Structures are given as C-alpha cells and as structure tokens.
Image (tube, rainbow, N blue to C red):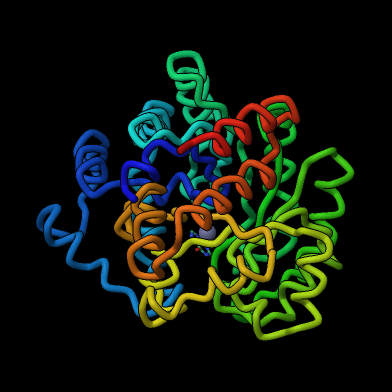
Length: 331
Ligand code: HPA
Ligand code: ZN
C-alpha cells in the first residue's frame, strides 16, 4: 500500500506550522538566536514528547516556538515542511499559524507572515505546491485578545485566506469567539475551528451555528451525537482528522480504536492530516500508512480520503477537477 499512498496526490488541511519544528531545527535556531533550551540535546527533547493529553503537548509546543524570532527563522521552518510536502507528493496545503504565540514575545505580525509567505511562494514556483494561510486564534486567551490579533493582521489580509481556532479546547467553547468570527467573515475570510478533539459534540454544534465554519478541525467526537452526524453528512461538512495526533494525545488509546473509518463509511467528508508532525511521529504519508496498517483501510478508502481533501480544500474548481481525475485514475 505504501507505493499507492506515495503516488496519491495529497492535500493537507490541518497543519500547524509551529508543529513542524523538528528538534534538530529547534536546536539550530536556539543556537542562532542565543537561546538556552531546557534540554541537553535532541534526544532529551524527543524523550520529552510523551504526552497524556492536549495540554501536556501544548505546553511543550509553545515553549519550542520561542526559538522562532526572525523572518529567516519562519522561512526556514516553513521551507523544511514544504520540502517534506515535495518528498511526499503533497500538492496543496492549507497551513495554520499561531501569531499570538509570537506577538506575545515581541515578534511583529509582519515578520511572521513575511517569512512564511516567502517559503510558500518559493515552493509554488519551484515545485508547483499551492497553499493557503490560516491565522489561528488561541482559545485559552480572550476574545478581546483575538480582536487585537485580527487588528494586527489587517495590513496583511491579502496574504491570509482564513481564520481558525486552536489551543486548549475544554472550557473554551467556540461561542466565546462569536464576534471576532463575525468580523473575520465580514472581511471575506473563510473560517474554520478545532472542535470535538477533546471537547464534546456540543462544541461542534457551536462551531457550526455560532461561528459558521466551513470545516471542523478534528471533529471525531461527532460520533457521540447522531443528530449531529446526520447534519454533517447531509451538509457534507468536512472533518480534518489527524490520526497520529489523536493517538499521541490519547484522544484514542490506540490507532486500532480510531473511529475515522466508521465516520467515512457513513459518508462523512473525512480527510487525513498531520496536525503537528514534528511532535506526533509523522507527516501526511505516515498518517495514511498508519490508517492502512492499523485500521486496515482498503485502497478505495484511502482514495476516498484523498478525494475528500481535494473537495474540502479552498482550491479553485478547475484545479480540484484535475486532481480528482488524477486520484481516480491512479491504479
Ligand atoms: N489542538 C488544539 N490546538 C493545537 C493543536 C491541536 O491539535 N495543535 C496545535 N495547536
Ligand atoms: Zn490542530
């Protein structure tokens, strides 16, 4: 199955660029910027990647992001991820970034966006990899802070296609951000939100009804609520599911327990994604491989997952059609 997965034109819709910071690059950037990391070496850092829930991961993830300081740092980070895309035949990617993590350390919005955008432009030109950029609000912070973040992004709106909502889910329901999402939609931005990763199915309802999102990030808890399932199926609202993330953060105890194929078999628009690949043990290819191996997904199920990602993306219809034809004709 590995060669089939490798040959599939893949689209990624749930990827935090700060979550692609591999330990080796973290140490290199720490050295370049004169920052002392609280780990002796790469092996000690990797050994700390033993998570028991979302929060235990987020604590390390925000700590690691502190090595990102200059435009060159953001370029190098994004370029390293795009090189993986090129190697794994990921042809389009819609990338989250967390500006509040950086603004809080005195880094300018323009620095972050310029570094990421320069790498995206070079990957498009050199490899034909297309992309979108999604600004995420940190949900453990206030709506006022999210509004201030959107204010800071106003000069760069042309370079951002959407907004999202991430960080600590429990206790921070989507409705907390109703006004800032209203404003983002009025500005013409597309909107998505993490919901139903650790949080309940009611958060998915809120993301749909209050935030009016066009996709749900994660969403695996939808299976707890049959009425919600019917709505997601009828409206074909995509779920950006992240299998390796879900097992590493103990959303499911082990891959064999994951419900994504049950959701797919109900005709939900399920897609596969890597979330924070440097922390969770694999990029998009490895997520597909895990689903093939541990869930025994068939070739046709993997093909459907790849087709769903094209459908759920923000690509123009003409490119969607080309990719769909390529996926359908792959032997
Ligand atoms: N969930 C919530 N916030 C995040 C995640 C996630 O999986 N990854 C990075 N920030
Ligand atoms: Zn995520």
